[in-house]
Image 1 (cartoon, rainbow, N blue to C red):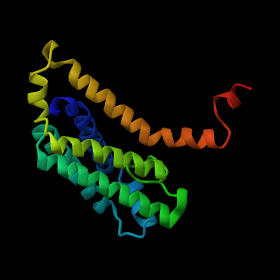
Image 2 (image 1 turned 180 degrees about the vertical axis):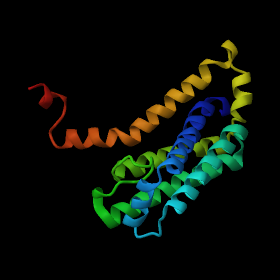
Image 3 (image 1 turned 30 degrees about the horizontal axis):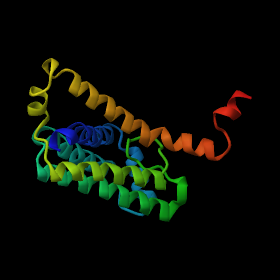
Image 4 (image 1 turned 45 degrees about the vertical axis):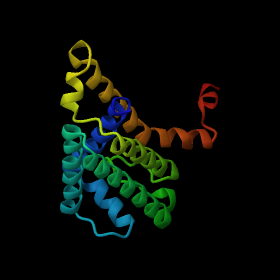
Length: 182
């Protein structure tokens, strides 16, 4: 099972790293989200959170071990809890701050996506895949397709967090594809 979960786990870990990098570069969205959740927030705090995310993601990608997978699980569970706190405090009006300036709304869909990411990492905790370098070394075609597929899955997960909520809201408001064609 470790070979089956390797790709999804690396994509989930990479997404955590992307979110952390964005917080390091553009912390203001995270600062705003922390304030909207009635938590202490500053650029320093946001950047520290980003650095922690990058560190966990990097270790998870390099080691692929059970402890690293559990840290990824804990990260996504914390994100789900934070999202639910934002919803409780601000309704759907607050941005999550996950990807810096991106104003992805805090929603139950967002929390569910975080829980799905946590579940994916939990599978890797049950059957650790090992580090990305070792997994790539055992792949066909010199290992080139595997990291490309992981990157594609990471991007699709990013889109799920950032664009899917807008699409769901548009469809719920009656602005689906049929409405736009008319």
